[in-house]
Length: 466
Image (cartoon, rainbow, N blue to C red; front, side, top):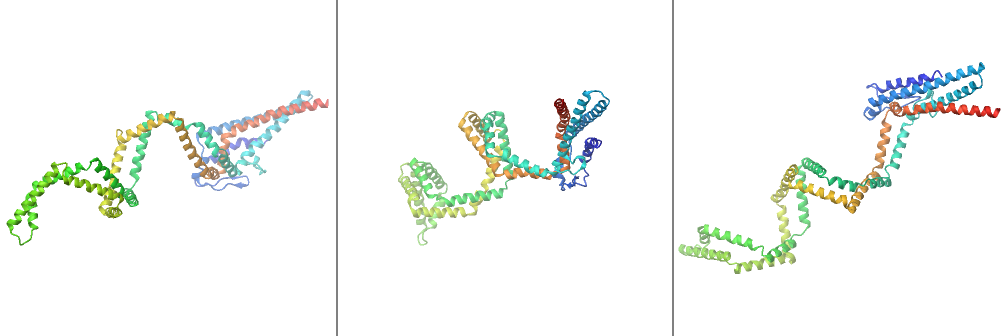
């Protein structure tokens, strides 16, 4: 009896010593006849320090320990006095009181032993199956990880909980709010700017150039060009181009008449007289100017018709003539292989990135306005469309199930490894600070219930004996 109180009341003082470990020594204090393994300070930091809330809980535990111990001392005094009174002939009532007090002491001591055995060896004696928390900490961590994995990270549980939440409908209502749509748009814009800032231009340019080149090499372009050209000719879309060309050709001839005539004269044979070369140059220039002028002014000019037939035949050859298609493919390869073309493809990324970044930064840009409108539209539809809600719920459930089934071992091992990294002694004292106050009620209840049960047994025994 005399050794019980120091163990109970003094445990808090020992806990205070361990709550502030020497920074130079992270070794755990031995528990009974077993020492806990050394633990790195960062891993065990949360279990080796005590917050103000923890300290308040520990003070509550100390108060409850004193209350339970005081009650034990009270029934012990009652027992002594009842025995003395019975010896002095006080009557039968003294025997009843002594029996109740004796049973109360037994109950109090039994529950004290049970509560103490959770956290340490009672009276420092290495009794088997005591100091359960410090000696079985790692096993408790493994059991906790398995419990979480089986009961919280199972496929059925995850699907049931997510289905009960109704993420699709809630997300729809949330997105339909303009303020929330603005927030999501701003976050998406910031994420887009961040991603574009992180990406290296050289890497992206190489990827874009390779992708375009590979796609162009893999797909034959002649049939597509042929179909497009055929439609353009059928719709008369090429006529404006012809008008532009012949108009510019006419204007150029008017401005450069002497250069044209000099070119013709320069190509004449050396044996012809100079005045003849001049006449021929003037004649050629006039005929060329007349031809271009007539072609410009006459929509039904024969040359225009010949050009229409040429383009129609060429469009057909691009789609069906093997040789023409092969030539186009060779030309495509030569064009794509030129350094200037590759530089042009690569430089396109710089322009695109600059345009996207500017649009993402501008709150009134078309990009952000369209994203915001799309989010509002999606939210409004999702909030009332049961099929869309079911699709979103299915996507979320599938993603969550994939995560928990694929990484369940890693998640549970996080719990197990974290518990294993805790210092056993400090873990014990912190757990005791959180649940010790309630455990002291077990001692109090044991004292009270033991007294009542002892009184009942003594009464029954006296009654049967009578």
